[in-house]
Image 1 (cartoon, rainbow, N blue to C red):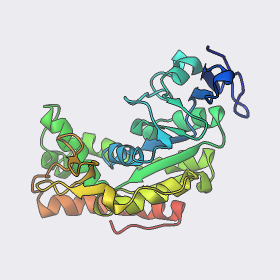
Image 2: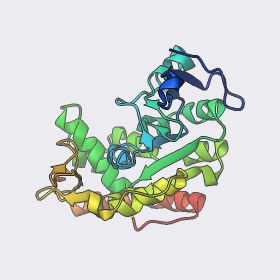
Image 3: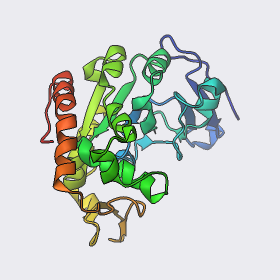
Length: 279
């Protein structure tokens, strides 16, 4: 039996579509109710900071569900409408939370306002990382795909691509214009690698859940030294081949120039979130 539920978020349209698998109550079985709900939290960024790892680690909590591929509704697919977006969500019980991850949202000029229009109480999760290392990761990935010259040529030369790439890194003002800081959770991307259980448990609490993820849930890849999920049989489930990939050696003067470029932006960001990182 399928039943539509037209309850809405405050200021929002249809919030859920309820699918009810109803068994005859005379049999004594409980009715199982599964819903496709809009997310109550979104991982909005940033690229190459560990958003995929965070989502996979959060899924260790049975009360957290997420769609498979990145949906990109609030930047690329907004014209498809809310029904399209809702249908991309997984089925969940009333006790489970739906979260979405599309790290390109952080750079979008419209995503924050559109998310607020759907649900002003939405919880926003942002994974941050040393922007110098993040820039290296992102640009080297594009280089591997044959899309650009070497990272060093761009960083020390006059190429505007790297400056455009880095200038757009912090759009926190846009998000703080739309959501109060108590609805925004900052995840330390470096610590997500060095102490994943700590970062995940803090995120679970932010989501209003009892933390269940512990250090025993993780192991370290013997070569990449990147955290992997420990399966029940003791084997390790690791993320894709690009995760934990070793970076090539970058000349010291290149790193110094990038650090100088970012220092002012980093200090502004730290003041905005009332928190600092050793970058």
